[in-house]
Length: 227
Image 1: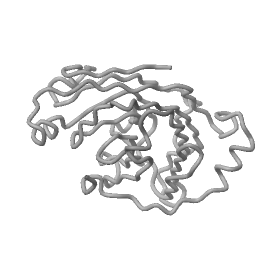
Image 2: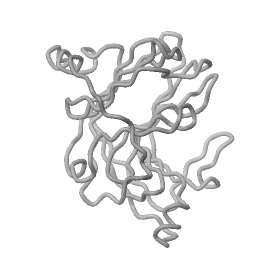
Image 3: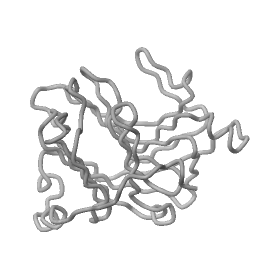
């Protein structure tokens, strides 16, 4: 498995951007596909699977934001599309405000997400047409998100996948707690896979049929209203 640890002042840099100068901390891996036949080509079906472990003593720094998994554009559109975040109350799927109206769906309550491996399965086609696009999320085999609508920007031509720990708006944590130093955060990942069908990712036809037979009726929530 991969172990990520983020401490106060850990910040990354890339051309034209510095976390250190923008109230952020980061420890991430990212994968970028550039070929026309790549996994991340818009309008084609995509499946992803992650196993995520959040320790019992994980330090949640809400109301600062913390992303554990995110998809971000790199060609034609460099905005964030979606994130899986920890925030008040638990683990959330986020339609990011860079691309959508900022919306969150609760995936796992805080007390249920700690100290155990969580299986996350995400299915989308990254389609910009509101009549064709979709996003679905299953947690431990149970559907939590069944969204139909715009799943990409019209000019989005490619993406990169990033996972680890990425914290932003750190000033919110200081304003609420009075602490100028953020605490250590640790998470683990295993079994990360991505491909063009459920069967290729999960290697289990029966499980895929079970996932695809489900529906979800959960509405998105206002994460800032959750204490």
